[in-house]
Image (cartoon, rainbow, N blue to C red; front, side, top):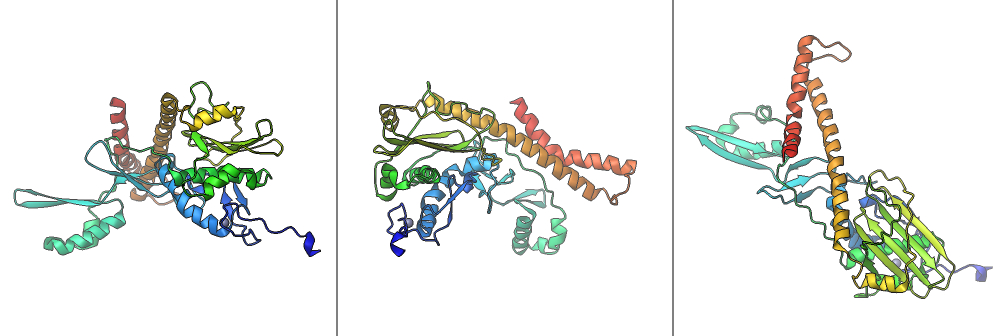
Length: 387
Ligand SMILES: [Zn+2]
């Protein structure tokens, strides 16, 4: 009976490892770090899963991090790391995964008016402020006369908005990122029940140093490969299609509706036709029903690989739609948070007992307090309207 048993398949990355029962690590088809949910198991060996995650996937996630932050992507584990951005002014800002914007580094400024010295401290959180105060008490003896607690009580927590334009880079590409996205397409071929070894061009690219990329960027003014593109929200997708008529396995990958790549995983495919799609709303995680057009000819594909299907106006229009969405959704995210914080703060400070009716006086104080807390939000957004 032993001869009947099929031998373990080899890891497709040609690392020499056989895929055994232990290699049932989950591999995300689209990285979870950018909002992908679907996984496949038994696709590559555990060691390659770790190595490619650390080298290729981490680089792709890093390049897309500004968009992941601006869109409020939620991960299964951990958070999208906060990131510092330059602005059109002199100050850098830091964006956080919960949508907050803060100063990039804590600071203090000393001013002297007459014979009065004033210290102005800015920190990103109360905890950071406490550390800053503790350090400064050693440097400024007069502060040492007052307790940290007493000094903390003079602090005011306000939402921070920079009136300068945040500069976000949208650079995307390079060998590591290229390999990560090609791996996504091969994972979906595997998910279709097709032997991933059929993707000879892709496997050569993934496992050979300096190999020729098996994809090209696709921004054609006359032909959007996402036929029924949803315009109201950004998407990620991976689509693979085996075509016996041209003996090819083609692929299409898109991230945040902005980065669009056409792939050719094999030009010597001898199997049956197949197609498989994974499209997802990266913000909500819901799968999307879209149609991808890969009725392209081999010359079409080669022209994309030669950068001949890169119409900058199409890419710019994708950037514009994405940022229109980001501005709208961040306004809503920031409004919800601002109201939530203000109401919580006001109730915490109005001395009302839980379950009791508020007195007129308490109600007046509550409203005043809410409006006070909302002021930075209102001020920032009315300034934006004015511009
Ligand atoms: Zn391997």
